[in-house]
Image (cartoon, rainbow, N blue to C red):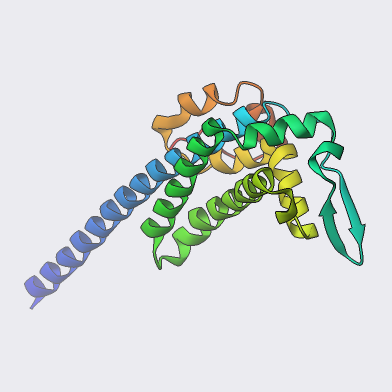
Length: 202
């Protein structure tokens, strides 16, 4: 009887180890998919506006609504940014980003923990990029405060967004990630956040 009990415990232990190994492998594969999203997101942002703009999108407010002023009435800096947002190069990176965001979501499927840790942050960042991209193609798409804030955040809060990605990329992508962030003090931002991790060790 004791032998069967020991065998049972052995089988359970082996099953736990196998599940742990597969879980780690699953998360590692997921991080590689986040790498693809991060690379496209950073290249898109770096091309659109290497530094946060000094000027803001000019809008008219009425009755709680938002309406951007016509392109010719926008600040020159914003007009240049919008022009780059309509370019072939920007479209190329945007499509890569869109595909990578979908790949992350498919990988997580119904796993609640992974969805919270990976899918939701990636989808939030993609929404910001989507809102900017839509606005670059048609300013009238920025028709409420939520979209205006998303448009602004994409351009002005890049350090914050890049910190979100830093925590989710793979260790193998660290060097390339840093190369795409030369204008941003990620290490300084980590110290401010006082979080117990340096560059990704995953």
